[in-house]
Image (cartoon, rainbow, N blue to C red):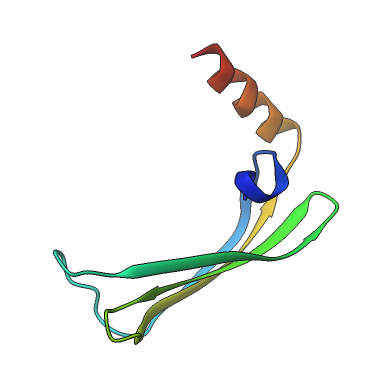
Amino acid sequence: VRQISGEWGVTADFHIRYRRPVTAGGEYTVKGRVESKKGRKAKTTAQILDTEGNVLAEADALFVGGAGAKLREKKEEEL
């Protein structure tokens, strides 16, 4: 979310739907996108796919930018 909006966001809501097993050592593709941004809120979706393009897991989340997010950004600048 930071790369798209230019600011940090905190997770307000997060849902994962597991469709098939994801095994250690496998090759996977992860796709994510910001579906919409309105004010401080950003709605996102993501998928994990195997090498054949089968969806193994899907997720959607809501991130909210704000004072807490700005504080984290400031702390990272100090490092």
